[in-house]
Image (cartoon, rainbow, N blue to C red; front, side, top):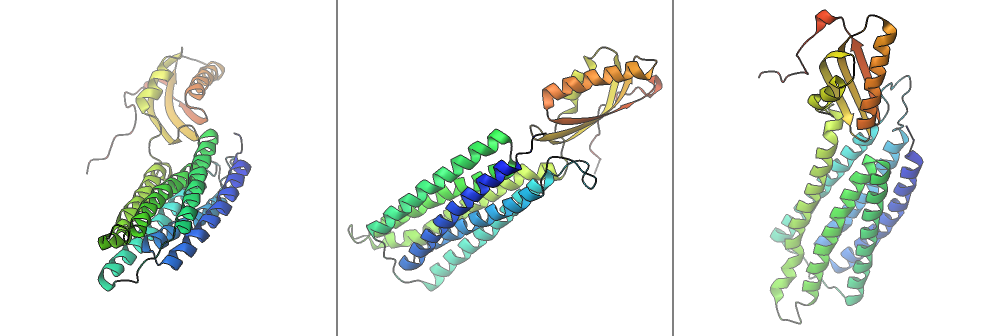
Length: 306
């Protein structure tokens, strides 16, 4: 299997530097103007940078090649890194909500925003858009879960920045239109920002838990159809699979074949492996040959009754 870790590291370093740039600009403008939503957005960008660092650490230990200590490979390190991203998003969501509630009950100083500061935020938005599409494009091309997860996080940052920008424009125009209620936009928009952050964390969690808990990767019926089409196969049962399609899949099965010698049985299993490899590559297959009396209709494992 090709090792894409150097490519992933390069992308993570580039996005880390860009996220630090974005975070600094948001933090400076947020604290200068007193904008809660922009400070929350800066916090979101802090997690972007932390995610990049976490991704670099996870990437260091996520070699696709098996070794003595990890005979099934190291891909779960990337999934663990993605779960770390979900944890960071949860923390950011809590901080945003806490700050918004405090602002409602205890009040705050007036927010003053200038056109120059708004233009800087538009530049920040452009950087966010570039980072999200760059990471997602490379992640899909090389099948990197950590890049795809981080791109989702950055994509949520785009929507957050758009919301914050809209609110700050409203606050900027509050005096012009003599609508003082617009000044509450900053606090009100902090809540949808938190929801967007939470949604991003949930999606990352949902995408990576199946890999970590060894959820079924391929329906046993699909594997059974392919196997039974191979000449010489009499019966296929107790089929199991785990991993992630397109990343690394593991398939196990018990097989009864029409063969009286090891060499013929081996040729049949090679045909099975080739067909499964064509369909589900990359895949590692374990086939247990059994005598005819072990023939079974038990296709796979059933859910345990509660």
